Length: 292
Image (cartoon, rainbow, N blue to C red; front, side, top):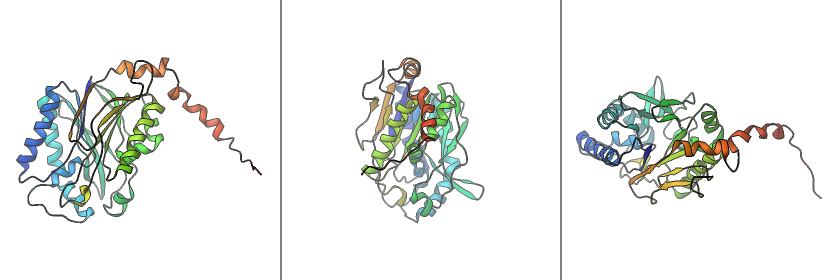
């Protein structure tokens, strides 16, 4: 299985056709290199709202602009997935869900069908300025490439969601991300690496890059696309299968052997996945000692 994960920089387009041409070029480039799964970042879908003359607005209004363009964004990626015979995690964007506005990431299959995961834990900026609502469930998706889950950026920093996915049979977790500053990128990147170790699974991170002029949501952005694994027998000792350069807009493409990723759970140097529950009884016996 070959996976392509992007460090992707949205930009303003004079027309929707210009955006279509850009994304078609990106998908074509990855497909030509044999990629089976293409991963785009959190708020990559904001690009669907960057059509016409640059015109900034309040963050909550940007959420509305994205939602207005969501149907066309999904249709474009559905067509591209079918055209090139690949799976695509489209850049997430804000979507109306009844009276709520959520940050949603769509996964498209070669059939053109779509499934989605909503962000479950929102950042302070998304709560206050964008006025978003949280998603209501952790999901798993069975695909021709295996069973996978999606943790949108900040979600990756909370271990129990990833744990639930892996206990449910996830072979890999995709992490589309958007971080303004190096500190944020470090938090998400280190969380991805920790989740790969805890669950002895594959984690794929895709960051959005900035800045995008006249767009408060993407006024800055930094990151480094990468694929992470448990550092164990038959896998890279640093836990990094492949990574790009920081803030370089490009695909990172790597061949991944699912059997090699799964092997540490059975015959690894350590048993993080199977030993996870051994924490439970110890936590129930928390004690406090005083040292003079």
